Length: 116
Length: 111
Image (cartoon, each protein chain N blue to C red):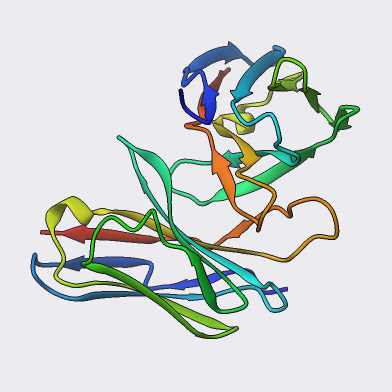
């Protein structure tokens, strides 16, 4: 079975440029999460969707960050304009609704973003 | 206080040793618990869920202590390939599938 697919795997761009990260969740999963990971701050939840609807975006650092999920099989995380402090690994994860317990999340390979 | 706290380590152990990690969580209403493993420059991967009665998967044993709000992971007969960061994960709340990740405990198994 295909896992969570993210693209690109690596992105290097100059400060001020727009960056778009993409994610395809596992088919049948109704939750999608965007995380950012750095050495200093660990794994931080940025935003998550349920059935394509954003539920909690309190982790989005500032207005330069935006995320969309136009359909069940695709989501984007956009940074505009990008800044060097945005350099991190960005992970997308998906999970499905469980009957009683929360279900584990399955992560994509991540996008390693470097802003120069 | 962090919602999920772990000793960052590193834990340096010889091959064949038994090693245990603990993790504490702050939300007494949490119902779901997991251990994830993350290799260097890779994504976190589910290692095992943690059940109330404790559970075992090969060399790995997970325990949950609700009264003290901690979770443990025991690795027996450690292998070089067990070297990784182990993330303790707790459901953030019972609405939705949000999970809160600990900062991870780094394990290095040496020959």
